[in-house]
Every structure is written in C-alpha cells, then in structure tokens.
Image (cartoon, rainbow, N blue to C red):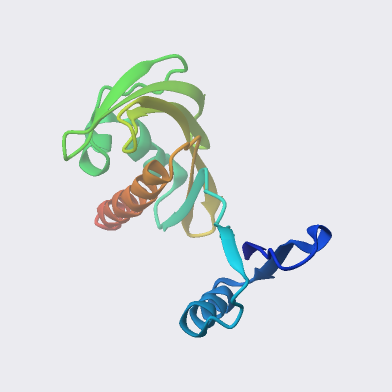
Length: 192
C-alpha cells in the first residue's frame, strides 16, 4: 500500500492536503499521468511514503527426515564424534548436559556449542553460537533434535531457533537442507 500526500494550494486551508491510498501499480500509473500530461497543474507533490507488506522474518527452522534405522542407530550418528564428522563436521561432542564443544564445518566455519539437554534416543538440545553473516558479530541460537520411533524406522525432527538476521536464517535453512540430505544418504547406505 502506498500513501501519497499532495499539497493543493488552490484549495482552502482545511482541504489543502490530499491523501491518496492505493497499491504501488495504481500510484505509478497516477504519477505517470500527472507528470506526462500535467492534469492537475495546481497539485504539488510534497512527499510520497511507500510501505510494503514484508514477510515476517522467520526465526525458526523446522526440518524433518525419515530413516529406516532405529532411533538408537540415528542417535549414534547424532552423538558419536566420529559419526558426526561424516555428516556435520569435526566435533569434540559428548552427550552430557553442560559439555561445551566446537563444530568445524567442511568449509572451515566454527560453531561454539553447549549441550543443554540429553534424553537418550529421544531428544538432544544444544546452544549454537556463530558469527552473523550480516555484521560478523556472534549471536546465540538453539538446536533441538527430536527422534520419534516409527513403524519402519525413525522420524528425525530438527528445530533451530533464535535467528536475528534474515541472512543467518537463510544460510542455516539452506545449510540444514544440504546437511540433512548428506545425513540421509549416509544412513541409507547402512543396513538396519
């Protein structure tokens, strides 16, 4: 929606301001006609205020993957450093609440983390501190893995929350998709 306020000096003082509310296309058409044909010679445009309806920035990533393996097998790939390294990055991880660890991704990015919650074979939560793509300052977010037993395997849910900048949300959302696909391929290559 665009609001255009025009000063009309020929009108009396109580009607000097003309407010036009319309969508962007309508205002563009109106201005084009006005400036090309000067239909309103006494109309002086004081200012144009343009407001756009923007999508509210997502602050939470939710992704889900399905595996033929048991929750115990999927859990091992979430908690054993040598298995984490195969799909996420090098990590000195231990599934113990309070344990601080660092993940070094395949492109050399470093993420400082702390284990917040461990419920074996069910839920794993850790903090995630990384430099923002927007301003290179550290920000904190949280990663929650939830394993749900299914008839023929496991559903793995990822929820990553706490984003402040759209650049970080977008980069992580794309990154988790890529990493998730790598994780799926890795587990699909092993037997049940």
